[in-house]
Amino acid sequence: MRLVLRETMLAFRRAPLLSALSISTIAFSLFVFGLFGLVAVNIHAAIGTAAERVEVVAYLRRGTPIEAVTLGIADIQAFPEVESVGHISEAEALARARRELPEFQDIFEDLEVNPLPASLEVRLKPEFRNATTASTVAERLKAFHFVEDVRFGNDWVQKLDRLRTIATAAGTVIGAAFALVAIIIIGNTIRMAVLHRSREIAIMRLVGATDGFIRRPFLLEGLTKGLLGGLLALGLCYGAWSLVGIYHAAEFFTPTESALGVAAGGLLGLLRSLLSVGRHLRSV
Image (cartoon, rainbow, N blue to C red):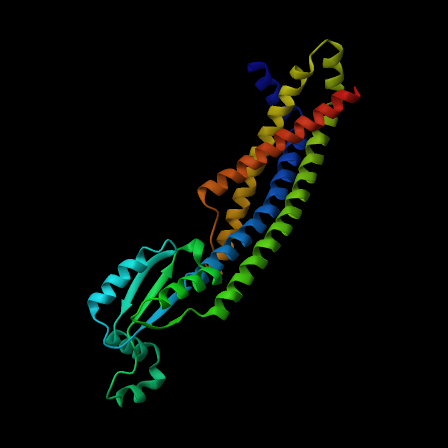
């Protein structure tokens, strides 16, 4: 292992320019893919923020005893799709309307009787914030005897579902295309480094070195270059994110996603080295 490490360090020392070029190429390939990842993360976050507004509102019959409402809330809270249930009294509904609709203050002042009903605001768990689940929960709520009407903005929720589907499909296709381009570029970069040392491989073969012995330094070199390229790409993505953050709040990769990105760079470098050296050894 010590010999492998020494050979790997020597390879960097013998061709520092080629090593720097390899790392830079890997970094910029992963950087482009990382930028797309940042866009995808922020689109997902924006859709998630919009989806937080998905809720089912059950309007209650006037005169419903608070005891019946309390029991009903406990039953609704037990639904597997439900995250929370909020009770809005008639007085709270009127106060909210006055606060959110200031243009109708004159009408509110002239009211002798509160026309707004009490309601239950049912928030769904993140994985259930879609039109199908909202419709199912709404149908269940209608079965309660104290519920007069149920609304959940079906048209708006369906549009949100379509947007989520389009974003997922487009992200998968474009992401796969960027990933393929990055893999091809990284593969060619590693192959160029292997060809640069073709004479060294031939000499090692002549003196009786096994394929495994020849491969190991190249594999470690590819892994190292991939990891360094991944770290550099992550730094470039952070710089781009910080620049955008000056003008607009944006999400960055989580620590787990960042670590996976760097690890992916190392894995790509390792695999491409394995393929390139293997192909070269077969031709020697």
